[in-house]
Length: 271
Image 1 (cartoon, helix red, strand yellow):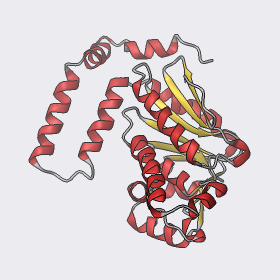
Image 2: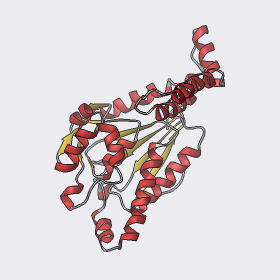
Image 3: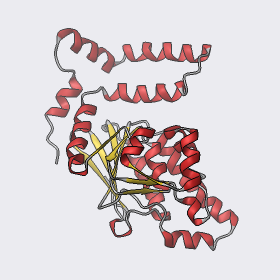
Image 4: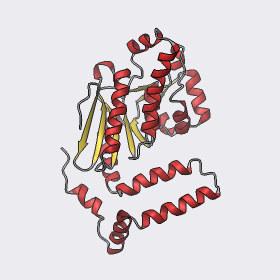
């Protein structure tokens, strides 16, 4: 879709994109350029109506080792206001990923340290290898997981977030699944087959319905009941029932045939 220095954004003809972190020599560590390119890549994904969902992955051995040490050293030499600008840029990335209209699936292998835990937390779904290593490592170098903290708390809960942010303990993919950060973890040898299984399952679903469900659940939040939320949910189901995809899905179900979006995905071969 476009050329980047630190990323690859690839589209599959079945109707989804994969955004690869591609600084393999640096273990996909963040720097200012990667953060800016991630923001631009998400803008491109958001603007493409043909895409059903987005995969976020890392090239090579690791998903991402967190912040690039050379970039961090440069940041330490900057004044407060310049560091604030950097923090705002990172926050824009995290909030844009969390609020992306498309469903997002992170695929994690190797290390996911520091801000990389934030990226995984911002995705709707995440899978990884049993032996993946996660770490909120900031306190080891005198920092705090500030910008990513709201998303980490949402993903694993306040109590677990306190533990891992204060101890900087590493935890495995299996532990990440127990905490809810990963939806599932698998042996490393099975990861690629499982990625394809998740893709195939997502392609069964109405693209519009997945977007609507994501927006709905953002509004529902923790599920605290109030009259405004009730009205929002009533309107949401009424809108989608009369939408073209809602009508197509209901007709397909009643006539015992695949809906149009399934036929489209099976007639296109991945490249």
